[in-house]
Image (cartoon, rainbow, N blue to C red; front, side, top):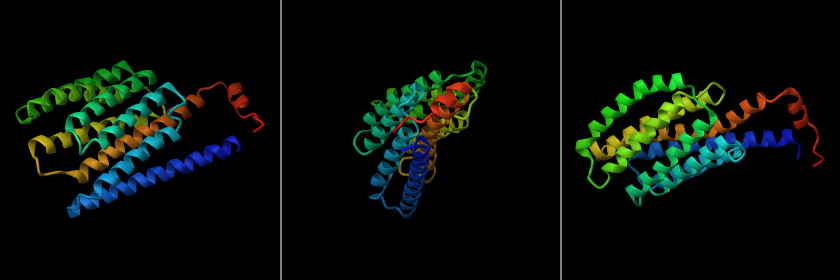
Length: 241
């Protein structure tokens, strides 16, 4: 199989996975609207497995950024698997996922000026959010929630401060969507229990994960475009397979 055929096949697979995720999220939103709970778990796990495959198919194992983001998404998938079993384990899974995403963003590169500007906005927002949730948090999970607020704040600051390149157009909205979806989930769990806003949370969360997965292939494309012309020509030479 030629290199161009493989690339075309990978694009088709990625398009199918994005379509599958959108279909699953739409079905979950309909089930939430109708009050049906049973279809949510298989649908969300299918969507979560699909965004992990999307990252792998986009070259998630071929670069340091790709490996870190893909591993972070793997822990997001693990957290989604634990959603019905243990809230503490779920938060721990995402507490591992976020530092991996942070490491990936640092490996890819950030602009200090942008990070400072993002921090000037996000630090007061996160401080206010922590104070807002404080009276409602059970004692056995409060330390996990505060730790998670810290790491996701760092993640979104670095996402907003990411350097230029095709992947930035995916990374910035991904970081913001992740932050907003988790803030809404925490509000529903601790402040207004019994009022689950899944119609907003699911699209934001899965949009964030899909965008992060797509940023892997976008980052690989940017890296290829920066290669010297002679190296690109060598890559295009027939391999004999």
